[in-house]
Length: 328
Image 1 (cartoon, rainbow, N blue to C red):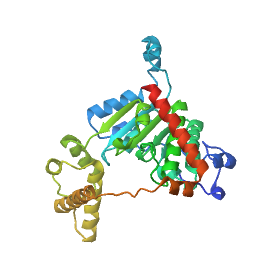
Image 2: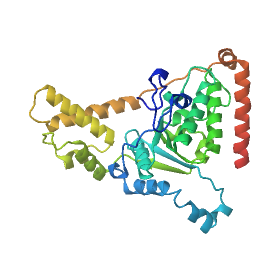
Image 3: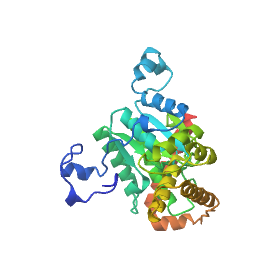
């Protein structure tokens, strides 16, 4: 069952965490056991060190705030916000699972597609349900591809969707202010984050492309001992320096399927090289794409969403901007 997706009421059974059918209908988001541990994570030593710092934040709060007196100079909050950012395929999602595993807690994975609704006002309601589900189940709350929900608020509402976007951002800010537990965000586009969200996140950890030593470990991890091959791991790790762990995984899988189709008795290194080149070329092509937007008038937005909703979001956005100004 997809995490975060709506659940068919007829299929609801007694759930060990969320309880009976009526309770589950109130919360349509279900946590899961972490899929990875810190031992599974192949990242630089500095990144792993930062992840351990964050994971031990709650454990060391009493020392920092009470014994060392930082409760007198800093606002003491049990909310722990961490943002994992960097290129796609560098291990951010795996790291979120690894932190949850380290803390011996379940993880509630949320993608924007899971909470987005075409109906006005429903997306903010779904966000509230997500926070409540994490609280009720004592789960680590993880927003994957978080730029979709933490992006900059719109000041002049030049498109029909800008009003509902601002409404969603405002609700998210309010819930983050109130939340007193662990939240993890992951994004490929940190530059799109609204500054108000940036200030409410305790630590930002950048995931770089793997260096040569990490690439060697990734190649060794993804090439199964049962897969016959003539790949020189040191050679491919040195040659392809702009690829991620996800790229390496996909290249090996694609090469293996090609070898199987051609009834080879092994996966030759030439197939691996071809698969990597295909991935690199597709990424280069994707980087050259240009995206254009078409602005529309506020009048059109009012027609689509209604005057009341537009005014509510304008008021909420002004309030949040005033709050941010007061923080500075």
